[in-house]
Amino acid sequence: MVFKINPIMKRLFKITERLNLKLPVIGFLLLTLSNCTKPESSPIQYLDIPEGRMAYQSSGKGEPLIMCIGYSANMDLWDPRLIDLLKKHYRLITFDYRGMGYSSNTDTAFSIRTLADDLELLREHLGLEKVHVMGWSMGGYVAQTYAVHYPERIHKLILHATDFGGTSTLDPAQEVIDILSDTLSTPAQMIGLMFPAGWLASQQDPGRLFQHAKSPLNGYTITLQDLAVSKWLSPGGGTAGRLHTLQMPVLVITGDADAVVPYQNSVILADSLINSSLLLINDGGHGLMYQYPELLAGYLLNFLGH
View 1 (cartoon, helix red, strand yellow):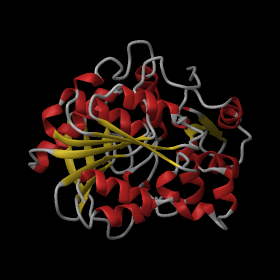
View 2 (cartoon, one colour):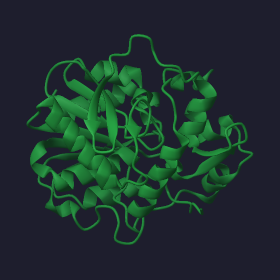
View 3 (cartoon, helix red, strand yellow):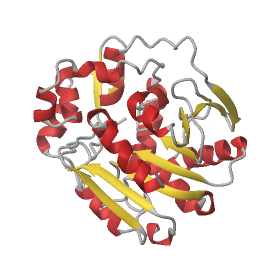
View 4 (cartoon, one colour):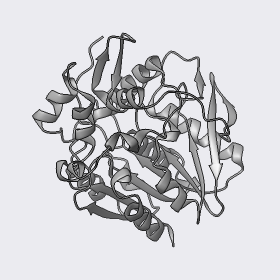
């Protein structure tokens, strides 16, 4: 099977000899930096979905905010500092995509639309009439698709470091592609793509930023996600040409130093929406929430109403 290089690191793979699997950047980092053991007192709940089971967590009080994580990642990858700040004002609902983390999947293929439909089943299961939805990177694909197909269920939408698919996405620089596609690239090089060089140089131990993520990875499911993302980025894929139908307020937010998903993709995305606000965070990388969790939380809370 051939995997073509695309503008998101989550579709570029590093081969690990120990597992004989192709794992994307985030997956490789988590495998390197965590012990992949389940937290002892994690309040994980489950929902049966077609051909699988979805694991989810709910914390905080207030209006519900469902958070869609990125490609190859599980719900525990969200920065805990960001989560702690947001749940003071909102009921946060995080989840593992089918086949990832503590969720299961028996299907042999799925699309971004499948993941969006799973999200609707979760909303219905929780008895929520309307929700805020946030999507990071591939999670932005899921959030957009959910908004297009279930617009009446969304109060406000947040799209972070993502694009609208199709063939209009802007690729990262060639040196970024070279590092991502080189099987000899080191964890330090991979982490370097998540953050601007100046900010990273000021950190004594950047690996600690990911050590809270301990849930298991599933290489087979990551391959299925890759195929779904490939379809999203193919001609006629994504939400290009359909975003103008959305009426809800949308916040498009990204770092202006994102080496993985260039910020210009967010500019194009915001211009395609009729009710959007665009925020470019100075010196923010693809791992913006790990760099500036308080700043990001402040912007999110302001947009949502606090």
